[in-house]
Image 1 (cartoon, one colour):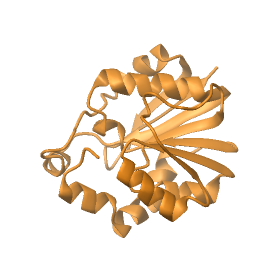
Image 2 (cartoon, one colour):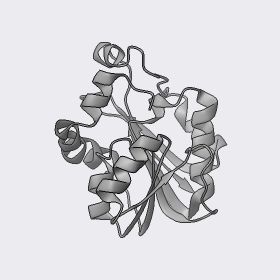
Image 3 (cartoon, helix red, strand yellow):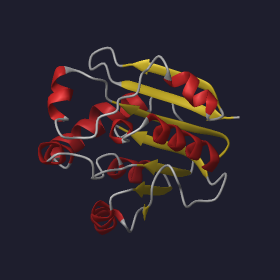
Length: 190
C-alpha cells in the first residue's frame, strides 16, 4: 500500500472510520442512489466499506494490496465480496454494477494515466444509467506533511469533468467541500 506508517495508522484508526461515517460519506454521497449492486474501488482499511455494507444489498470491493485484502476479508468477508485486483484492470464483467464508488484513494494512484484507466474501468463495469461517485482530498499543508514519502497525485478539480467525459460519462458534477476543500464527483453511464 503506497502510504507511510503515520498515514497507515490514521487511515486504520477508529477516529478516521467515524469521520468517514459521520462527515465524508454523507457529503460525498448526498443525493446519490447507489442501487442494489455496488463496487468500491480502493477500500483501503475499510472505513467506508463498513458503512456501505449496511447501506446496500450487495457490495464488492476491489483492493490492490494483498495484505489489506486479507484484512478486509477477515472483517467483512461475510457481508461483502473482497477481491485482490487493480482498479485500472478490473476482473469483472461489463455492466455488472448499479454504482461504482471510490473515496480518498485517487491521490494514491501514481499517475494520471492510471487514474484515467480507473475511470474507464468504472464506466465499463457500470450498467447503463449507473452512477460513478466519490471523493478525494485536495492539497494543503497538513495533507502534504501526511504524504511525505507517500504516493500523492491529487486530482485537479478543474480538469476532472473532461477526464470523466473522456472515459464515457455524462451528467458529470464536481464540487469542493466548503470547509475541508475536499473534492467530490458524480457521473453517469448513459
